[in-house]
Amino acid sequence: MRAVVFAYHNVGERCLRVLHARGVEVALVITHRDRPDENIWFRRVADTAAELGVPFLYGEDPADPAIAQAVRDARPDVIFSFYYRAMIPAGVLALAPGGAFNMHGSLLPKYRGRVPVNWAVLHGETETGATLHVMEARPDAGDIVDQTAVPILPDDTAGEVFDKVTVAAEQTLWRALPAMMAGQTPRRPNRLAEGSYYSGRKPEDGRIDWNRSAAEVYNLIRAVAPPYPGAFTEVGGQRFIVAQARRPLPDAARPLPDAASGGTATGLQVRDGQVVGVCGDGGLVIVTQLLAPDGTAVTPQALAPHLHTEQSNEGNR
Image (cartoon, rainbow, N blue to C red; front, side):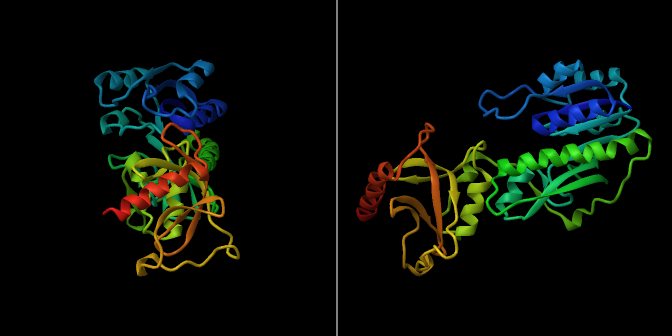
């Protein structure tokens, strides 16, 4: 099997290694340049391609005629896409007579679209995974070749789940390749009506609405915790990032009046020497790491003056 690979991020790096280990001839890798405004916490596909002696080029726009020509010149049997960030045009996909295949970070048909791991954590899912599927003009819509599930534990952050999904992607591709290389690629329907589609997320989507339930607030914190931009809130006119948190144990949780009834104020507070978030249903989120915008840790003692400023501002309105 001769392949052209569009790849980026950890899933791209690990899946490229799987292809190499299985004896797939990778004729060309197309990857992205790192964005200067992004936290690069993941492995670089370009570095791995260079290590393995695989030709690679940078291509931000797969619709660029130069990319199509490079793929054509590589004469692939198949095309793979592993966390490449742009939609590959149908005309480019058609250059591989054996088909084009994408690795997606969810159990399709659930969570088609962008950042599927973050959306799964945000919605409180207990399971997700990786799916290898046939590429079509619509995103994540083609037949399923294989998939592997992983658990999402109650306190897992999206970063931790992404690590599991990366391993699931590696396992899925390793398992599927022998049949694919023998020309017997398995396929089963990807029943879109039974799934869901979500678009990308922006840093501003990490703003905490303390009027929501404690479960919803905690899921947001987990879903965007570092290395992602982080959930944030504003106190006394200053932004703070809730980088780590936990829920109280059931026997330690203090029942509070429901905020909707006007019984308690929502938002950050300092109680018993620790920072807590009071949510709309009266539930608590214990903040174990609070950061200032410059990334420095904020102690309960340092937060307290901001809370007093907030209370003073409320009183003047």
